[in-house]
Figure 1 (cartoon, rainbow, N blue to C red):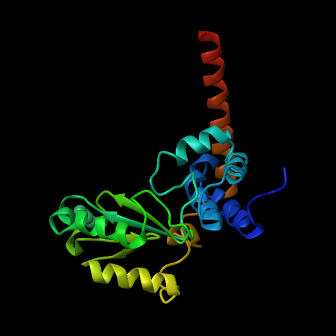
Figure 2 (figure 1 turned 180 degrees about the vertical axis):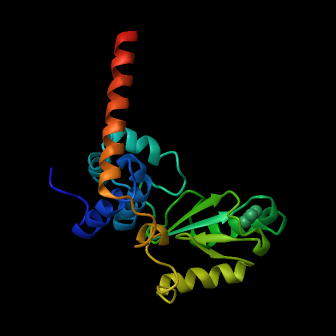
Length: 209
Ligand code: FES
C-alpha cells in the first residue's frame, strides 16, 4: 500500500509515537495530524494510522467517530460551530444559528456548495463569558451578533483571517516540539509488557470460549 500521509505528517507521527510508552496512546494526536493534512480522516489515512499505532482500521474508526473534534466525513475548509448551550442560548444562540443557516444557505450539519463552510451546532465551548460564541477551526469568536457573524464570514471567505484561523484540524498541541519524552529503553520495556499482557488476555479469552 502506498503511503497516504505526507512525508512531513508521517515524520511528525513517528515523533509523536516516541512520546508515549504505548503506540496506541498516540492515536488521537496522530488522527489530528492526518485531519490537518486532509481536512478530515479519510479511510486511507485511518488505515495508515492503524498500522502506525498497532490497531485495526476499525478500531481507529471506532475511536475517531466517538470524538466531535475528529471528522470521518469531509467538512468544509472552515468548520463553523455555533454553541447553543445555556449561556449562549440565553443570549440569542438559536436566533444566531438560524441567521447563520440563512446567511450561508445550509442547515446545521451541512456544507456550502463551494465546500468553504460547514455549519454545526455545538455544546458549551467553554467561553460562556463571551456568549453567544462560535468556533471556526477551533478558534473562538465571541459576543457575536448577526452583523458580526456576517463580517466574520466575509473575512474568512476573503482570506483576511488566514493568519488567525488555520486550516481545519490544526491544533497547537500536536505541533508542539517539547514536552515529556520517554527514553527508548522505557518505551521498549513498556511495549514488551503490553504485548505480553495482550497475548495473555487473548489466550485467556480463547480458553474461555
Ligand atoms: S454555553 Fe456557549 S460557550 Fe458555554
